[in-house]
Length: 465
Image: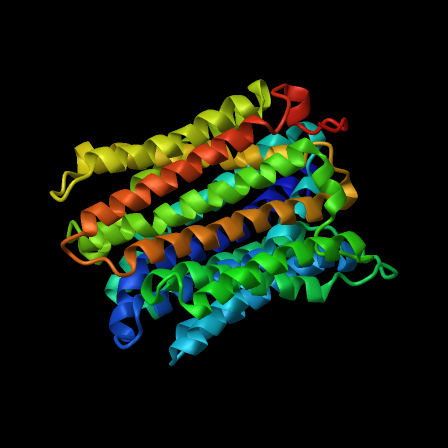
């Protein structure tokens, strides 16, 4: 195989795995309504854990998996992640009980956590420094397409069968990713004398995020002064600083606090957190709005998200080239502002009466452009100046903040909309879009302080920002 062909295979193997990871999250947004018919006795806030379990475990295990990728070899962890993810998908599709389904989603989260940092590390290792921006944009763009197209693909499958079949959507793509990776990925190089990462620290992150999400979701139902809710927020507030201190003292911490000394790294992770909150929340909120307020069918609601996917697909390559030429700030800031504009458009122009082309379609286009333009630039900023030996850890940390943001965003939407009635539905969705717009604005501000706008900084200069 030629070097060019090998690099293409690596890119597609990594990108296809990212596509399935993104698809797996978003497909559940449209399957949510069908879940309610399968488990009619379960409250919406409990069903929300089918989505949240995946995002919480995914985000919490990401950095641990990145550490394992550096210790055991990225190819080994990547291939294992594909197998675990596939097994979790089969288990979820066959789960007879809700608790088993939630557990299977957690298994999928573990598999996704193994796939993501290892695949990005393999991709960046195989790509010349001058081409990293384009490769990262391609990877992130394909991942975004998977997340954006999940509702439409999932709607067709769920409407024709059930939500169970939706979990099998990604299996053929996983097989292709595995075969391409087996053919082109370099052998794993294990660092046998390296210490195992801090498992206790990883458990602490899972506990902190579960407590926070539980408090947000159940607080509106049980009351914010309920002892369980107060206890959940207190537990999360205590676990986070304890976790940070543990990372500073542990010989092999879950997160390397030293990386946060770089302004670009810290700001890019803050940007990823707010990006995940805004986009994770709006993906669920928009499908629920089309179903519950405009009365769309399942297929109609799923295809309502299609313009965002098409827009992301069309602009991904262009914005990657623009990032190489002009720097990540010149592309990332307008992209994040486009997400804000989409939320404000939904707030201002979407009413009780269905006007898809004049009210909904423009917001979908703005959202798709914003997703494709902003997060790839965040991904580039976070690895600027990072050495090859820490690429998996850096990208895993960034994806951790993204997925933790997704978990918080979904929890916020479930909390705001979980108890919505027909009479107040419109006002509740307007509140949700307003909150998500603020989160998008915070993402914009974080991108603005990531550092240099120059091409040299974008493609991976060794100088720290």
